[in-house]
Figure 1 (cartoon, rainbow, N blue to C red):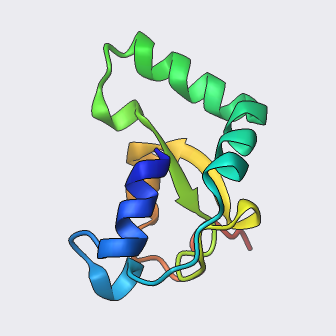
Figure 2 (figure 1 turned 90 degrees about the horizontal axis):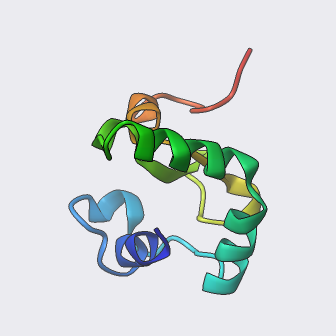
Length: 95
């Protein structure tokens, strides 16, 4: 997961205008957050149970879609849920 985020902020991936140049937390900080996350464990078990269906794959999601990859701005979601946030203003915030 970390390598994918790192590649996005260094090369921009397929949308450099969105990702390139974003700040990113250290690898150690990311994995410390991941190891403490009960939600990530549940997402992982659901992904395995689904037969590794991509829709259930755990992914890091930026809570503020325009923000950096910081410990406070990352949560874990399924790939499908993460994709559903794409393009929504104030993604992840509730009224």
